[in-house]
Image 1 (cartoon, rainbow, N blue to C red):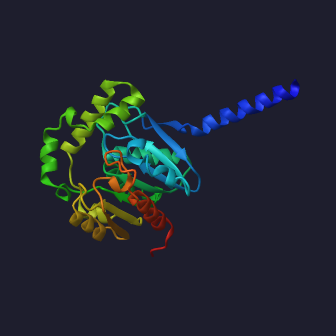
Image 2: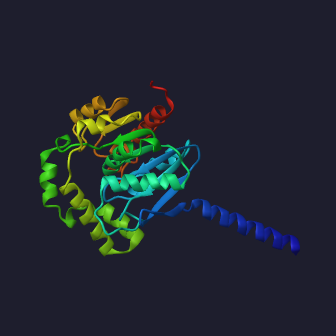
Length: 281
């Protein structure tokens, strides 16, 4: 009887352990007045993932995060008012987001990390490179631009009249799956829209001030113009450039461009891995 009971206890422990392993390792940090949500996956050199506007960890990086976690300690964050993270009585800004991520790294006792940002997360990553260079080892700037003429004028015209109904449904669904709060969703939409409506160019001097090695990546049919990506590549003092087949984020399997048969996300991860390990000096 005792042997049977012991076996049952061991079995229950194994089941519990397996369930725990399957759960997202979500955590919160008190950062500059908000509760900042983050997850840690894998082990190895630290790699911070910063999602796009209106997004969550999963909507931006759900496809490639497991691949990246094979060789890195992936620290994926959800920024102010996004996903699980709380809000503050202030607009969302790239500078504040950069300061929040830098403070998180400080609290985690991570001296420097590789930083990957997609879309608005790329602009936040760029700000980290400017404001907190000591926290950055290498940068991956994906599908972002540093000034208004980096994308089609029609984008800015559309942003002037941005409506909640224009927000892609997968982003709405992902947010509500987390918060179950439609008012919080509207708040996030309005703050993200305001940030883009009041977008101001960075100067070429500001961009050139980034000294960390950088990988600039866009799709050939991206929001960012190929000519602008080349311009960024030229201005960054130590950068590489990749223009992959795809749209805004499709090359990394972002939720708005799902294609389970595409091998491009695997190619993208392989390129990132080489960039983070190869000595380009």
